[in-house]
Image (cartoon, rainbow, N blue to C red; front, side, top):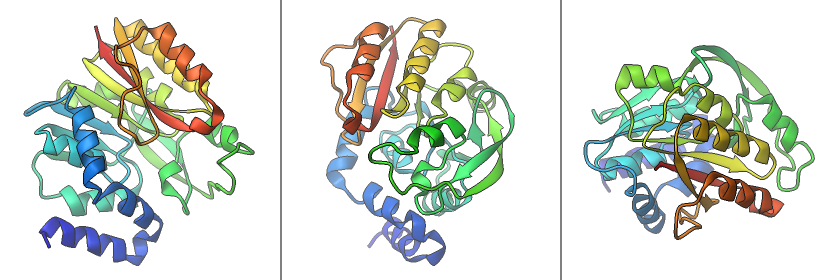
Length: 257
C-alpha cells in the first residue's frame, strides 16, 4: 500500500469525515474514471500549466491535473474538505489550497451547508429553492449556515498567475464566479443542473461577452464530450434547454476560439 493509499484509508475511517466517506469512495480508486478525466483534461492542460479547481470538494480533479503535470490552485470553503485535501496533497508543492468561496468580488458570504451530503453545499439560496420539490432532489436538507471568505477569479489570477484552465463546480453559484472574471481565459468548464438551466445560460452569455468561445458538454460524471466538433453559443444553449430533467447535471466546456 502506498502512502497515498494509507492516507485515503485513514480518511475513510475518520468519524469526523463520515459524511464525506461516500465521496472519497466514489472519486478515488477508479482507474477507468481517472483515465477518462486525464483524457478529457489533457485537452486543456499539460506539464507546467496552471489550473484553477474552483469547488474542489475532496480534490479528485486535483489528482487528475497533477498527473498531467499541471500546477493547481484549489479553491474550497468547506473545512472538512480542506482537511481532506491537506491530508492528500499538503506535501505537494504543485498544489495550493485556498480555503474560500469564489464569487463576484472578494468579501464574505453565507455558505448553506448540507451536513448529510456536503457535495451539494452551496452559497446560492436560489439553488436551494430550485431543488425544493424537484425530482431526484428529495430529502436534501441544507441545515447549517456558516460565513466564509470569498475570493474572485481576477484576484486569484493576480495572486497566482493566469490559468490555462479553470474548472468551476459550485452548486448554482457558477454565474457569480464568472462575474468575477474580467477577461477571457484560454479554456474553462462550469457545472450545470437541469433544475437551474438559467444559470448555465447566463454563464454562456457571460463568456461570450468576454471573448469568442466555442463550447462542448459532458453529462454527469462521464468525462466524455457530447459533440465531435465544438459548437457556438446558441447551439450549446439549445442543448442545455433540450435536456430531459433526468439528465440532472453535467459540465459545459468553453474553449477560446
